[in-house]
Length: 185
Image (tube, rainbow, N blue to C red; front, side, top):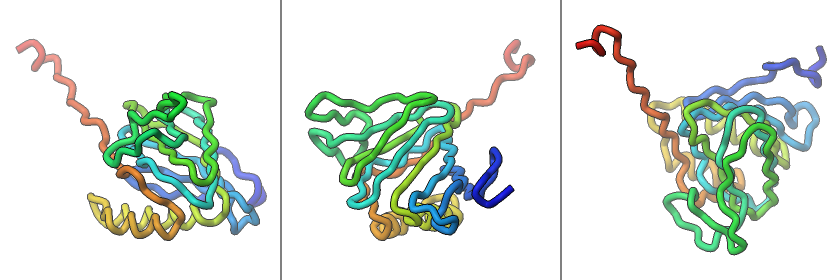
């Protein structure tokens, strides 16, 4: 196998509580576009944000994600889930085979509002901005059980990310199943 042909599951992985990112094409390989496979766990919400210079492409491989890609009539600061565009566009629940192209200057977001992981192919231009971003966010996530919001905000500014609503990760709470003897009592 060459470094330019990767079998399924191959590539450098960064694993955090909020995402699993596998690098597929990078600046080191000579690519001007960074390409990643991303597993998005239930409860992850990247928060609405905008890039002045970068453009992105998302392709849902498995599962479902809520996607937003438009300028809303009003940018509420707490959440993007009910945003609407002047033309009536709203957040879309996107399944396998759905995609989203994000031109520079366009507010966008994704979240996994289901109880199952979702997987997407994510491309970002120019390379290596998001490669470096993922490296640094993994470092921030690895520091402890809570994310340092100030560190994330400062880092995002350096990587052309203007955060409009907060990044959130609220995994669904699992309720333990009752045993047969508990149920009969």
